[in-house]
Length: 466
Image (cartoon, rainbow, N blue to C red):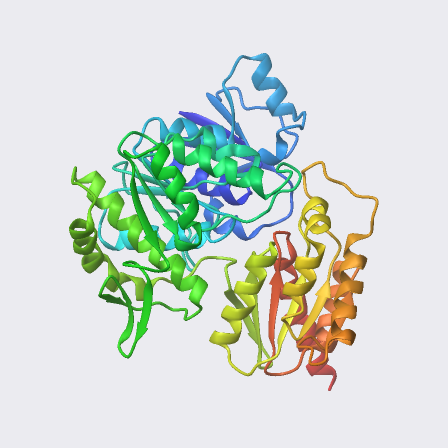
């Protein structure tokens, strides 16, 4: 079939492009001119300007959720020609109706669990596929080996994950996010409950121990599902002299952060259950243990995911990382992970807030999380395609909050706050501030990763001047 993807450079859309082309389809797309970190997945793709006409031989148009309310030429022409039009979640929903599918959900940690589970299944030679919001470091294609099973990132935003026909589900955590859609945390919890209750008969739920009480209620409503808890109990991650253990099975992982290790545990359990289900087996302690023994050796070779604490460059003794963290909980985990990986080094963030609604609703939480760094440069709120513009200067409010944190605390960690209003200001500010030994992280769901190259060039220029 011939697919046309509007917004093809997006994180999920580029992964979908890679999956579709590897499974024998023809794809073209359109998007803005600027480069994204997803360009590796789009090597060789035909990409038209965003408001291009729809090619005459298109069978199906798929558009990014960012363009739900946009009147793009290609979308208008597809409707006029009665060509099927699907949103990105709608396309995933269609796939889950055709292939045994398993979702990874939660406020954060979804991408890491998907990526690690994909790596484990691929290493075991399992003929499956996955679609999620990143891809392995050093790779230019997604995992699309076959259709025995499909692992997808199932996001709760706008209740998109309720569209999917799933045989199993991972829930990493439930926290308040997407305030432009959910009015409060209770609404978020209710959405996850609906997701659990709509699983296929005889499916499974892998959940973090922080959700133990919620899982007890789910079990009463859906006793046919298999419930597997990790984080504590039988599937707690225990650190020992020879590495880490899960249900008595030793495995190693590139990271030592407790939250990240919990994601590895979820990924190992998910990959184990997918394999058991695909073989027609019954998921129980014995079959899970058998698969953990098979899969655990591959955990140590996971290369990491692009834009998840990814090492991008090294210059003048400064290490440059990129991390997608854009929720306060994610920011805390990311900073803690960096401090464990790079001990006794100054952590400098270039942070781009993502969406005005999230920044406004979680201002106190952002201030608290960001103040765990040694220095923070705050950019303007990312100009999201979501209709959540604010008349308030939220970036400036965040800077003021960080300054209060710095001056009011008796022993503050954060020692410098900067406000940068343009890319040029960000590059100039960072290149003047950074010192040998620093860890510089571009953070947020925006596009500030692209500034790393400019900062490196500026540092080289400063060196040449000396």
